[in-house]
Image (tube, rainbow, N blue to C red; front, side, top):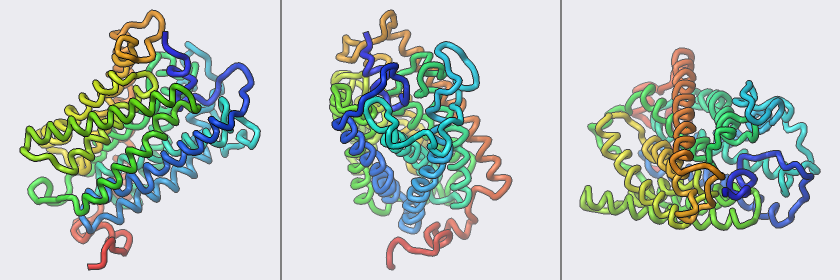
Length: 436
């Protein structure tokens, strides 16, 4: 039978919902303070450096600026209404589909109901609010890699604000909102954000790349990463920070957090090697960018399963993600011709799909997992996971398309050809990343 801690109470999604009054745990609080800092560290500086090293030198500051500005913008929006719309349980009832199965209520606007005394499980609600805020920060930040080097900064701010409001918050609520939330009631397992974060961001990135179109000169002109050292440093920061992402999603310092940390390490290492050897066999050499990308693919894929998989499942998920994401980011991208500049779709959407589906397999006790809900089969759980994946893809794809088209016909999405040639650092920010 599925451990309650693995299925629900240990999920980063739950805000509520213990029936007995919670008691503050100093140990749980200390761990969650640490985990929250680790997840913020994943965006600034981790993701900023990972992406920043992969673009051309004339665009490095634009990436850093985008990640930094998104961090600030999402913090304010999360405070104003994001936490309430994602995690309010007003009007929700298990098994009843209504408006609040898709979006939360307004009772936590401006965090008015959050004070020094309110608790979520055994930690201050203020800590849980901040922890979930860091998820809301990194998810839109992931998208910028898809349209790197060609979107207006003003358009980016409008897109991120609208996308956060209309896409991220409903998906987060449907998956993590508790009894009465659509995908929660279906039994979708997403411990730390395979659907909410990675499929969500990856699909939005693909739509953005298609609408804003290819970079000038792509694919005929060489556009190599300008500083792979930054990329490896950023990937290393992501790897370390991800322990806060996954193990922190237990919302406690307990056995579930410990296993989440172990399987995260195993899957990441396995995926890094799987990508490296796939590239070695395909291209004759193993690249630094490849092994770093493989590690991130493993981190992505284990995320939804980190609360339910065991070490064997982590090996399976890591191996699958490393190989499949490599081919999605190379062969598939070339075959279809889209310019997903930093492989947001190939790594995050594809890795998230792989992880979400394999969560239904690797949760089974025969593979060392926490065990399926009583009466549930592997096939049945995979079907539930598949439904969650499809809803996320369709919802995110349609809404992202509408938001981007709206921005394009109003203020425009793309910089001018002259600005793109000059580089976004100078054209949009009047600064250089390097003194030439």
